Length: 424
Image (cartoon, rainbow, N blue to C red; front, side, top):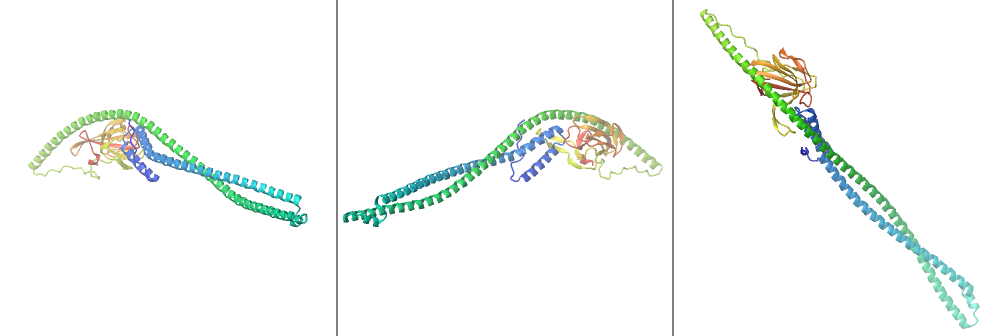
């Protein structure tokens, strides 16, 4: 059996979607009221699964989109972390170089000061006092100036290096904070990407499960549908048989009624002639009062509700139009079912399609022969004999080709199906 298309597309509001699906499932159950319960259940389950597929596909697409966006964000966060760590490493190297330079500069200044102290004494006065000639004095004064200039330059360079070191330490601290923030962002992005991927995987698994479920349910519907067609064929054979029986009884009853009507007419004419001869008015014939509900038949039950009327119906599984040959009265299983009028029970028993059934011949009423049938009953209360209007024939059920507790009430007019409402 080819897969049946989904009942509807995905709806943005899941609650609204559920209400629509539930409404469509209820309509399906009504259309399948005269279908075997196993097939009806399998088909309803299949339609329910198909109704979920658009939502599952939308959820998968949404999850996959979120996963892709999360993966992109994770890649960007990883790149930002790499840049931040590279900047931190570069700053660390620069700070290490500056620190080494400061350490070396300090050593040079200390060594230079020690050398001056050892070789030349300390201060310009000592240099001057130890000079033996004016030229030596002038040379030493010039040397002292040069040394002091060099020492001053070294001290300035050292001070500049110290300031640079402080700035680099501050910069490194800021970069470390940036790296830490980038690391936290990368970790969060990775977690989000993993969660989005897991959600997409779960959505894909759910969709795959629905697809497998749909395939399995479709196979079940196909198998049940074949069995259903067999039961329908049996029902058609049975309906044709019963129709033949009722038509034969109707022909005989109508013939007898015609003979009786002719006899009544002759008797009435004879009585009128005698009355005229004796100069006495004839007595008017008795006339039956019409039923209070306006028709010769009463509903088989006044409980529950009318779940399906007489008429052509499209079968959603077999995809054919069939006559729904009666009127369905839905009520809880066990609800009493009453005779629509006085008559004779001509059949009472079980039929594979109609379930527990009673057939009542009401004879000729208002010029037509009427027969009623009561189908799918849980159990029977009569097996034969004459019954009066309102007699309990059995109790509502769901036997035979039925999908829920109800009574399928049929009316035959001269052996052919008619709408029961014509006589109620």
